[in-house]
Length: 192
Image 1 (cartoon, rainbow, N blue to C red):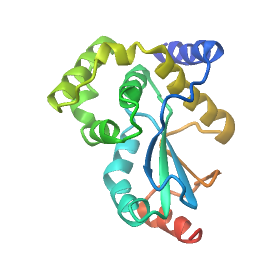
Image 2 (image 1 turned 90 degrees about the vertical axis):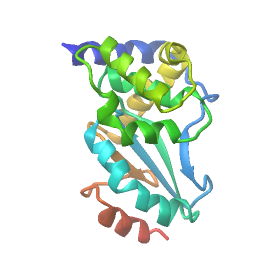
Image 3 (image 1 turned 30 degrees about the vertical axis):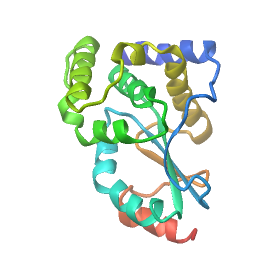
């Protein structure tokens, strides 16, 4: 039932939304790089957290920090807790990945809760303890950011047939192999 309500929320918001170009994408790397990676993720997805722990650091060191590639993080929330965490990650609107990375690195500390209200309290408490100075209620109630996040999900499903997270897109082609650094590196090396 929760998934049905969540899906309905996505379609209701999408039909009433106007995409804002003022909200900055979270991007790491050279924005003009030859290799463009898009990562569709859900903040509550353990596989996405695993990607940030085991793949992203090597990717950052070898491709993003060297200017060979950029990665854009796009939202594909799978539940309300992920939707709210996505909104929070975009709330500073600085294009930086600090909040996003901290949430993935510590996913088990804030993801707890038997209701969305409890999950929100845990998320808010975690962010405060980590020193992020944001207005939590303003972030999760910001309609423009919510539309931005939900539009990412809709566009991912529509343009790339995404149905699971994380899904990686490299230069507009869906990465179909098992997502580990070895496979990702092989694909990237062919593009250099």
